[in-house]
Image 1 (cartoon, rainbow, N blue to C red):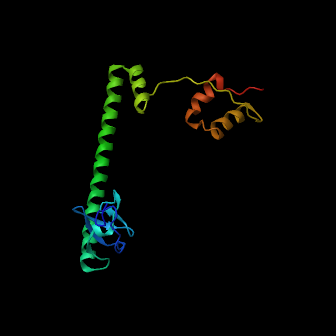
Image 2 (image 1 turned 45 degrees about the horizontal axis):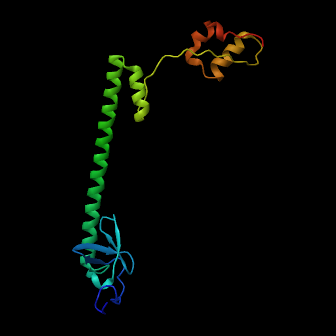
Length: 172
């Protein structure tokens, strides 16, 4: 190796943090004395400072102009990414609902539920019969039924609770 080969080249002044450099035909920002970052913030690169050409120093009018343009570009990209994500989510939700509706209309419930579990989709709703026994302390049967309806949260089943034999109060 010779003194002029890249492997033995002695570093000159470190990169100026925040300054814009051109390196390998791409404009990048220095994040420390030997590291450049893509303006999109997607990748960093360790470099020999003599291989990077200083374009704009921090605070110069050209630097402020470039930072303004970079920020504007990044905001546009972020807005587009947000729009794309929303469109993707809306499309996915529409597709999920169409598959769900098709399964219900074709009576493919078992097949759909298996598919839904595999792909993380909602499964079909089914009717279930639930029997419940609750023991409460009360002075009488009416008080026990009222307590269960009100305190346990069965207000929406008020008529069914008072008529259903499995909900009748009895001494335990």
